Length: 182
Image (cartoon, rainbow, N blue to C red; front, top):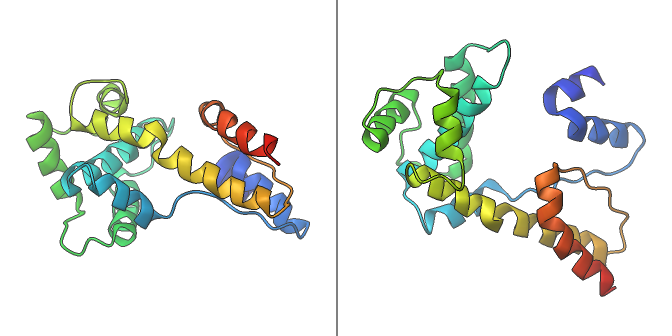
């Protein structure tokens, strides 16, 4: 129980409870290949990779007691390398710092939480990273998730959904639409 909560908050805890009680749980998140494919139709590998790195930097800055940055970031960079399938791209921290310099003309500061928050703001206008964030927040993930939920609904399955408030707001109209047609 404690490990599930530590690893993923309420979503992992509910998955833990479901498993413990023999109930199948499913995450309707889009597969990495789907996400990367959609992002690459509009943005460069360099931009997408740095966007993911900036997400990790911002997440790391939100820890009260921060783990070792290099180990923390490398875990995600290795995952991005594997999930993207990009054999011809350097996912090293050194390359991310180089890309940072190209994009922003400034020295990389892993501790600048405000900087990462600002460039990840989908309504911000600082750089291409804001545009990538807007594209991803404008339905890339939400549309996929709603389509997956609808598939389960049409199979007559009972559905219990755990997502944050912003996701609930974005998904509610679409879910109401397909459930009202049933």
